[in-house]
Structure formats: C-alpha cells, structure tokens
Amino acid sequence: MYSEKVMDHFNNPRNMGELENPSGVGTVGNAKCGDIMRMYLDIDDTGVIQDVKFKTFGCGAAVATSSMATELVKGKSIQEALEVTNKTVMEALDGLPPVKVHCSLLAEEAIHAALWDYAERNHIVIEGLKKPVEDIEALEH
Ligand code: FES
Image 1 (cartoon, rainbow, N blue to C red):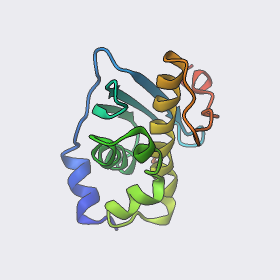
Image 2 (cartoon, helix red, strand yellow):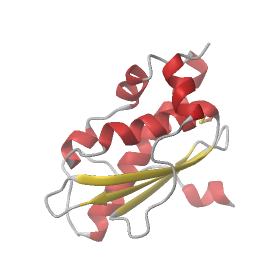
Image 3 (cartoon, rainbow, N blue to C red):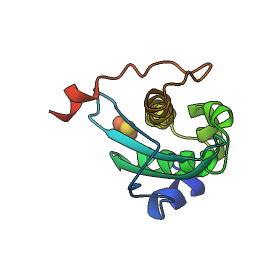
C-alpha cells in the first residue's frame, strides 16, 4: 500500500524537531482527522532556506510527507519553496494512497504558513503566497 520511500521517511524522518530561533513558523491542521503539522524555517538575508525542521502530530503519511517536504525546501529560495506543492511531495515519495492525499496537503500548507509568518515578521510581501486559511487555534483546544 505504501511505497518504499514513504516507509523510509516514516521510519527515519529527516529534519524532525524544532528550530530555536526560526525566521518563520507555520502550524496547520486538518479538522477531520485532527492531525497537526508545524514547520520551522531558518531563512538567511539572501532569502535562502538554510534550515528547516518539522513536528507532526499525525498519521504516518503526514510524517513521511513532512519529512520529504523539508528535504525539498532545504537550501532553496523562497520562490522555489513556494513551488513545492503537495503533488511535488507525493511524486517525490512515489505516490500515496488516495485516502492519504490530504496528508500531503498539510505539508504544502505548513510550508506556506511558515513563509507567511516569515513575511509578516519582516513586513514583506511574498508574491504568490496566500494567507493560511486554517484556524489552528480551534484545533489545538
Ligand atoms: Fe490526517 Fe494523515 S490522516 S494527516
């Protein structure tokens, strides 16, 4: 049911944890399954993502997609990171079962939410980036 890559990232997640002084943090959740994903980004002055960490309170596919997403955005520019969609993440994992597609959406949303936070902190506008819609407060209580 799951590809070898999914199992690998689930069993050995890359970049799991948190960053002490992140440039941006994004937390998103899925109200239906209750899973939550948090991304921490360290972005340097030139707009390159130097480091990224994640914490996922969720299913195995969510852990695997977060892990793969961190690998895909690390070392990339903000614009390149914006192009990492849930489809990109799924393709990099050699696919996900249809019922698990929503898990990969969390990864895309978490990256966007962290970039949004970074933009707000620095009073900048990132072209093409939309405000995260998820009301995470509601999920955490
Ligand atoms: Fe909800 Fe996977 S089941 S994120």
